[in-house]
Length: 206
Image (cartoon, rainbow, N blue to C red; front, top):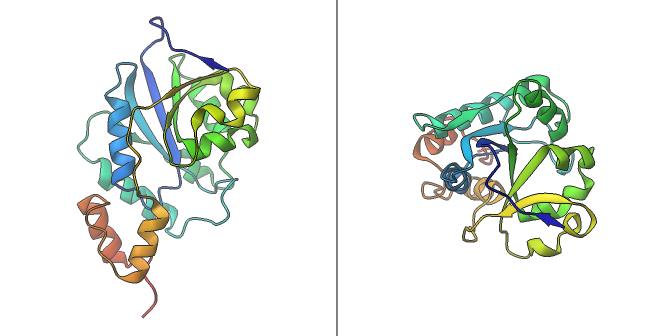
């Protein structure tokens, strides 16, 4: 069941979690689209240390992923980095981070996620508490019709589907292109591409 937004909602922060291995232009376009919403005052990128639902750990180090995010958002008003999950280490549970935010803000908290993640939301740690604390901003992913996601039929959840096109880009695709020696200049920010090339990230050993 979906609860719709209403005019009484406060302008809040949008939390954008993920591996960001690496951050790419799709992430940036999505974050900008969310920031443009009247309900959002700030988009906060939160790289995870270890995601509980991913099969592999990030290939780039914590410091490298943090640096790439900082380079990508440099000079953009309304974008910020929260590296608390990296500092904490171990498995990153979103509810733990949300509860830290709740210690100092009573504003609405939004969480940005793809439709593929939305399909897995029922499996997230302490999901009942999570959906009480967050309002979800969901962007479409091909093959994942949001209205049939398990969480929608089983829980009362506040979410909004973002009116965005399907983007054919992912961090996995970028890592594969790097391994093949193919240019990624059109799908990652320029200074992120420079960082990847400088440190030979995701490239096959020569």
